[in-house]
Image 1 (tube, helix red, strand yellow):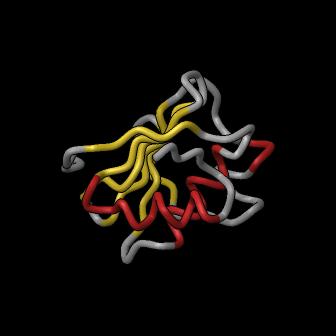
Image 2 (tube, one colour):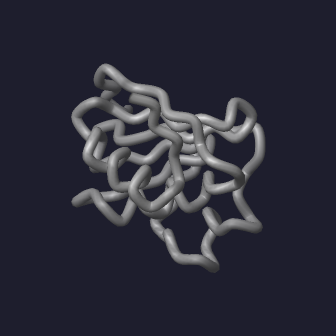
Image 3 (cartoon, rainbow, N blue to C red):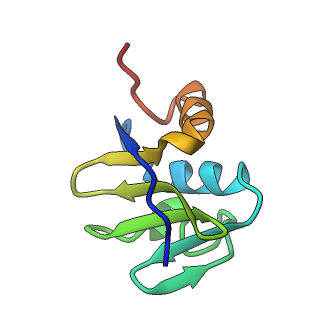
Length: 102
């Protein structure tokens, strides 16, 4: 069961949902992606979280072991990052994947 820390929401720019998931997974120690109840360990361009294969209208969770890193939702076009992993959100923003308003 994932541990959910206080979170911050960021709008996802265009169709970068899969890139946010892959980038977030690459930046944590023990990455796991949950799509529904299915655990995913392949974060490659050809895997289940590729740009053309990204699940629609489903929350996709990125975990570091059991700690919540991010939840990406295509229907609201948002990514919710745990405050403990705010550096991951900043990296995604620097890559042009998230919109951050100061």
